[in-house]
Length: 232
Image 1 (tube, rainbow, N blue to C red):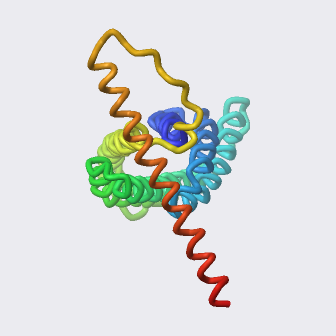
Image 2: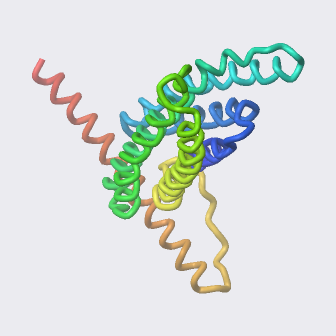
């Protein structure tokens, strides 16, 4: 499932200290996830662009970190990769949240849609500020003491923001199921516990709803194409 895969990749972004060594894995995992989700709506498809850019930036970060570890000073590369990194994370987060909001609303997962919609503007603001604060020579405009305080606060806020976005992704994973998950799923053996069986029934209902939604969406597209051909 695309949401579960994205959750794993996005979770790796919470490594705020040694991200140079984990960003490439995170980027490739998230890229694989949004590629799976690209057919759901245009927002997930657009998320492929920042995922690819983030993976390229992460590769440069890794080269820089390895070079520094072996005595070659490539730290100057970080002056360019750090702002771009936060920009890509912000764009990727915004597209994912927008995509989740749209598809959750369509399948009547209102709480998931609302959480994603409310999280989106904060994600844009936080990662935009993170991008600005990573610009080279920012210390020329802001006193060093103030810059240190802002950096500490911003690091904490970014960490919280990552967690909040993860909650939205988990909500999508929990309540929105892809049609292929329905097709590939094997029937579960009934549990001795009633609440487990109720949970499985609830999950199955959500899967059926989304599969029906996808089927209806495909029918509408096919109908529109047929009508256009007739007019021609």
